[in-house]
Every structure is written in C-alpha cells, then in structure tokens.
Length: 337
Length: 268
View 1 (cartoon, each protein chain N blue to C red):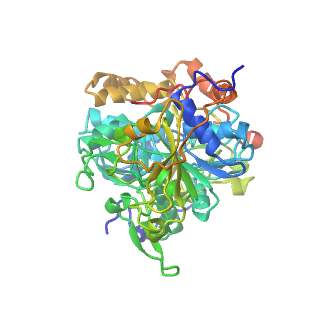
View 2 (spheres, rainbow over the protein chains, first blue to last red; view 1 turned 120 degrees about the horizontal axis):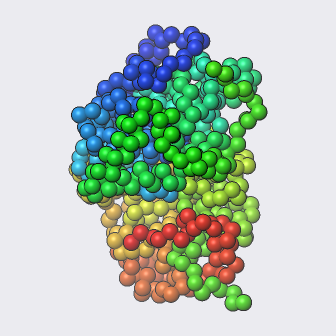
View 3 (cartoon, each protein chain N blue to C red; view 1 turned 60 degrees about the vertical axis):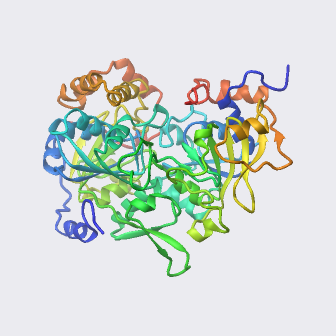
C-alpha cells in the first residue's frame, strides 16, 4: 500500500502540530501559493466539474510554475484542464504526474481534450475512481479514518487498477469495498463568502469542498466576497468550512470564472468554449491558439483582476444576470477595506 | 391537427421514450443532457410527482429556470427540497432512496455493462489508452446502487459489443445467476436500454439484452443489424408509439427552447 499526499498517521501528526489559532489569514494569492504549494504535492481540487473550481488559484500556480503534481478530485473540468494546458506548453515549468479522479470533462461543453492528449501519449499516470469513491475518500480523511466502506462500484474494472480493497463484510458476509482515505497536501477551494479567519459559507451545493478542506494538510481559500465575522457567526450552522482548517484566505471576485459560482455568476458559455477549443486544437497538433490563450489570459496578466479586465463587461454582466442560484443575500455586510 | 409529430429528431425520440418509461412519484437520479429533458417532459405529462436528484447535491428542484448545463450547476438547485453535496446524494442512493438512475456510456455489452473510461486494451494498456473517455463520474455509483437503471445509448454496431474494453458501470456482469448480489451490489440493475432505434430490456433467465419495441422507421431486422451482438427477439416485440405533436411541442417550446441538448447533433 502506498499513500499519495499524507498517510492517515502523518495527517494526524501534522494537524497535532498545526497552529489552530483564530487569526487574520489574509495574504496575497501570490504569497499563499509560494508558501503552501510545493513541487510534488498532491492537490485536492474542490468544486464540481466547472462549478466553483479554484480557477484563480490554479492560474497563479501556473504563473509561478509547479512540477510533478498529483491532482485529486471527484469531477472537475477547468482547473485540471488549465494545469494540463500549462504542462502541454512547457513541461519544464508546470507538470502533472498523476491524477486520482472520477471524471475530467466539461459536461455540456464537451470532453477534455488534454486528458485525451496526456493519457493517449502516456504522459501522466491515472487512478480511476467513481464520484462517490473520491468524495468518500475525502470524507474518510476529514473523519480521521484510514478507510471508508462503500457499496459501489463493486463489479467495475476500476477496482483492478485502484487501491480499493474488496473483502467480505464482517457483519453481513457480503463483499464490500474499502477505500483508502485521501489527505492531499493542499486543498484548493473557492467559495462565495469567507471571513478573515477562514470560516467559509458556501451557497448552493457544497460538493465535497468541506471534506477536501478538512482532509488536507493545508487549505487555500479564495472567496468572491470577504464578509464581516459577526455576519458569518450569526448563522453558525451555515458555516461550511471552519476557520481552523484554513491557512490562507484571499478575496478574489470572479475567482471561479469562467465557471459557475452559485448565486453570483453562471458558466460563461462563450469563454469556456474559447479555452476548450484552443485545447482541442492543441490535441490535434496546432499549438499556437493554446499558447496565445495562456499568453493573453494567464501569463500576460498579474492576477484574476487582470484576467477579468480582458473579458468584455457585457459578457460578465450577462453571466451575472442569468445566474439563478440563491444566497442569503441580506445576511452579511461586505467587509470594508 | 394530426396526433403524431412528423418531424421529430432522433434525440426527441429518445427523450419521449425515456419520459414514457418513467413512473410517477419515483425518485430519479439524473445525469446532464437528454435525461434531464426526459424527466422534465415526464413531469409535464404523466409524472408530475417525479423527484429528480442530482449527484452534486440537489434533491427535488424545479427545473423551470432553464435546463442545467451541469448536474452541479445553479439551475439544479432552484427550489430544491434538500441540498448538501456529493456524499449526501450518493448516501441517499446507497440507502435506497433512488428508484431509477439514468446512465449512458460509449459502449455496452449484452449484459448491460457500460464503458465510459477508455478504449484500448485493459489492464495492460491502462496508461496508454487508444481513446481516453471522461471517466465514471457518478454513473458507476448509480449503476450499482440505484434500484434500477435506464441506459441511454446511440445505436451503432461499434457501441454494442459482445465484449467491451472496460467495465465502468456494472450491469449484470457475466450474466450468471445472482451475479450482482454476489458482487455485493445493492441495486437490481439495468431496467431498460433506450436508443435511437429501439427499447430493450433484459431476459429474466440469461440477463442478456432483449428487444422490447422498435422505434418509428425501424424493424426487428434493422435493429439487430445495428447491434454488434445477437439480441433476444421475443414474439411480442411491438412498434413504439411515435412522439406526439404535444410532446414535441413541449420539448421545443417549453423544456429546451435554446436547443442545448435536443437539437445537438448526436456524434457519429
């Protein structure tokens, strides 16, 4: 048996020695990535497909360059696709070694061109799981358990290449799957609202963001809005991620753009295909559009504000207008500067 | 006005067949795309009490704010009755709250096993697939733990194979007696396969795929010809009732007016 990221005992030990104080955790995204994301790390990617993907964090990682990464996620789209694109363009600067995944594609927008490119050319190693498996693995990690039992997907070929163990249940005598916990080195999480200590309030589905945040050794949170601490703690049972599992909080409006951030902005049906088409062209041998995309939107800007400045205002207004998700709108005061 | 539509598309036929297969007041675990259209059509016709569940967390939402582009998108959450995350949705399924699950894949075998992971040789070619597909997502969990599954497929010989390259979502495995039970699965397995050409089910004894009905324009022979393995053809195969003018109107005008899923060309 091998562990990627931390073993359960290492994860426990790490947390025992961690500063859990309630302190102001605001730093710049640049510093957060410098401080917490290392070459060779296992990164837990939060969100679900293209909803609340940690796009701002991933763009910053790409600007700084990180190598030999392991990416762990249930279903993801843009975040691993951006990292894959960076690897395709210059693998001496950014590279993915391995993915532990259930699904990488873009649902209605289409398949992931670069997952195809990287796997069909044997450039990365994969470990396939189901959505429930990856979610339950993070959950086991967040529960402090070395494994978790699960009833699916028994009978699937996934079990031939992943680390799941099938054995007879000691109580029912029927086969059951045991999944190893996942403890990434760093969780990359985007939420709608956080306070300066790292408490997060997720609007809409929580996906597996709380589990990933609490299973990981470190956790970087970007939020669309920083809000007053008193407004956060007015609804304690609506706090999705508690402050002491978070290391860095950065207010990054549109930090999940061009994906969906529930209650704030919907998927950008123009920009996602623009990026995906550049990836598809790369897969088919035309490198220029992908290079141009990265030069323009990632390397050519300092941060997410620079990226968003390149998108027509009308396009941003449209994704805000059509977003149907609700949030506890009147329940907070946006933190002043 | 004629009762039946004369210009329905293959996708609309799948949606109508999927919708008519659903039963009112059942809980249906849905994927993106045609299944969502089918569920909504059923809700607007014979099944107003159908409860959709989405794997990213939403239970029982109204799908009246436009078709979701993703099972995790905000449109799945509108007026939902319960909303947490993936673990909660799959725990509900594992517990037995989900009566039906809609799934699909790139290829299928006679026992309803589905592949959505890779084309190529497995396990030796796992890290160098001929074609890498997106992966299981939640489909394999639905295949195991929803009480029954409804499979949606494009009907082409290369997608219906006696042996598939990789079993992502288990059906009846090798078809041997109680294969699913012996493997430890909770749900009963595939109920229907709905394609662009036919509605199929599975033989009670052998668990092999059997033809139930041919869709408009198809015959028993044309369906068998488009299937890469031998189908069981019972005596009571019937011609499926074509989409009505009203069903097609609901799809085009009410459910998917922008044509996200229904007008989209099925990939050949």
